[in-house]
Image 1 (tube, rainbow, N blue to C red):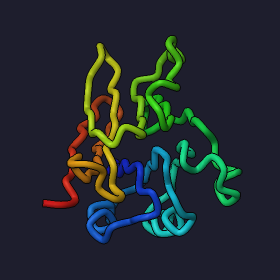
Image 2: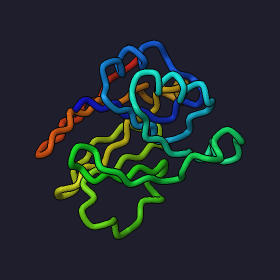
Image 3: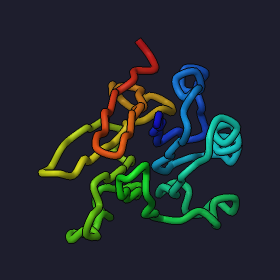
Image 4: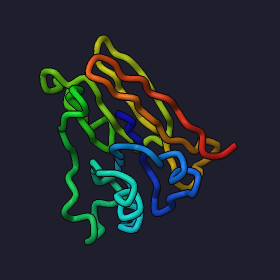
Length: 152
């Protein structure tokens, strides 16, 4: 299963991001969406899992969006939350994939049998940080993350 993971769009959904996400069976947005149109465009590609980011908290259009989600991703128990600081110290048993955003810094890090993933920011460039998203190949027994740079 091909899954696109994106975060921190802050209202900007680049054509390069849309192109990279084409063909995904699911898309995960880790918050700081910025505008409801971003979700509409993503939903036209694939079903979404979405959480609000700190910049979405007061937006009336985002009031129905959860602050965190737990779901199954092709056999991988997944926790989705915007800020790594909000990940519970003792994660739910069986959680194998933790997806966050917020820092604008991409990270793919295995901690024992658990993958911590931050796709970085796909929206406006912040400082000199890269503009990225992550594509995942998710199978029952394996997961392969690939960082995709959206700007050269």
